[in-house]
Image (cartoon, rainbow, N blue to C red; front, side, top):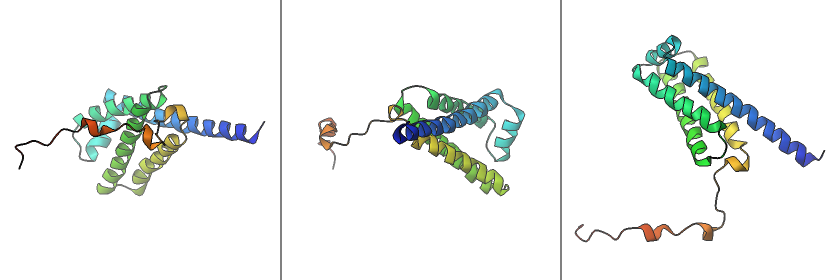
Length: 152
């Protein structure tokens, strides 16, 4: 077995481990939030958020967990990873602001690290294509409107 092939397999294994954990955390959390589990409602309201926020978060957590597992859809995955980052940094800041123990601040940040690993280790087919050739980027100037003649 070549070193390159071994490295590729290790990277793929690390990606799927991080992604599986990410999906599990967000799908199970989203399901608990959508089901209105007492611990989920208590945790969110304890931070000062209204109870309807639990359903809102549950919906987006579930969609994010599904998005990172779905084949293709690289733009949806980018948004899902961004939403997860917002969710977890918001959770860490909310726990810190509420004066909770350090572990409640560090756990979301640790999960954020796992999600960052999942994002960084994505196979090329799960990434947005990036145009490295400036000529490959379409000229958007044709979509610009002329200035309004009555504008000052």
